[in-house]
Amino acid sequence: MAQLLYSAKTADGRDRQGFVEADSARAARDQLRAQGLRQVVLHQEVAISQDEASLQGLSAADKAELAKLHLHFRERPGLLPLLQVVARKNRVWLMVDALLLAGGIWARSPAWMLIAVALLALPFAPALWRYRHADRYQQLLKAHALGRWPEMVGLAGRLRSASELAANLDFDLDVRIASVRARQGDLPGALEDLADWQSRLVIHPGLYETRLAAVYAAGGDRAGFVQAMGQAQALSGDEPARVLDHALAQARFGDLARAEALMAGLDLSLLPPMAEGFVAWTQGLIAMRRGRPGALGLLSQAVAAFLQRSDSPAVWTALAFCSCDQAMALHAAGQKAQAKATLKNVMPVLRAHADAPLLAVLRRDFMAGESGR
Image 1 (cartoon, rainbow, N blue to C red):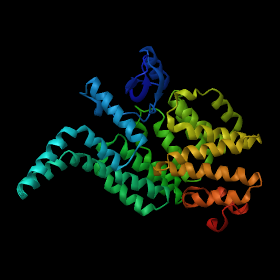
Image 2 (image 1 turned 120 degrees about the vertical axis):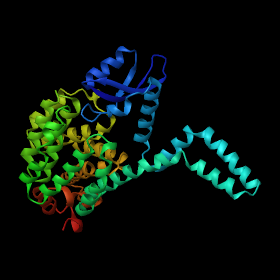
Image 3 (image 1 turned 90 degrees about the vertical axis):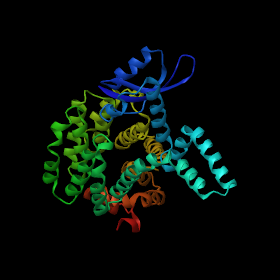
Image 4 (image 1 turned 30 degrees about the horizontal axis):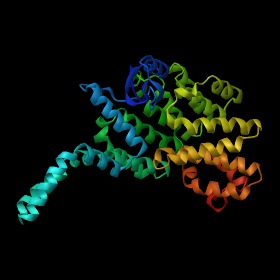
């Protein structure tokens, strides 16, 4: 059973946050609705849910507080918001220490001032110690997005010692390193590097195949990418996030009719908020390939959704590829100057992650300008 982060409203309009145990997004939503909650939003996928060990021994109130913190940091990531939360939770302690510091200053006692400063810093120390791993991971994501492979591999090595702090961090690091190997021309070797993970991740159906798809994409195997996404959907029991992944893969490189069928059967209300950009991207690609009006509007909507989350480098590759599709739609509409401007902003990421056929299209259509040479 997965522990899924959720937010909702009670019958009297109060906010409610917490974790719900369920084996599917639909089951989680139905369970919460049965409790009288409404406006239910699931913020996690079943395959990438809360680490159960982090919830063990917590009371219902503690779980609710933890959920509130998770939601806060999803909206405001970074060190400063973290320190603000720590300060609010320890405001009584900090007020007492501030009085102690003021007393030390009044008494001109260096010893008391040092003690007061140390006590003031004490609540922040654990948060700062844990944050260094999160900051290092953000640096790794940035290096990966920009194709700085040696830097990324070096950061992955430094993060290994912190792998117990986050579920499946080792797997994530191995996938990123395997993607580099695939991009350098050894796709079979990259796939072999990850083979042992298939049995280790059996408790997360579809997760292995979802991440394997990225390795196929890095190796330029578009058919393998689409096939892996289809396998992930099937193994997950048609979890909404995996259905959307498969639909987007089909819309990009596969069977357009299959993409349309997948989107038609998808309950969008079961997707986490971060899926908004992927939904509009998939819809825009389908419309563009069908030659329907509105394709450019949908792709622009998708880019805008990704831009809202672009403080995180985890979004940069999706933003780059979606912007590329938007630029193609602009180019087709005769807006060539705007197409070039759109691509210029994301070319550093596209150079690192686009396959040879896509880069050839960009050069052919003169959309990359000087940036694409």
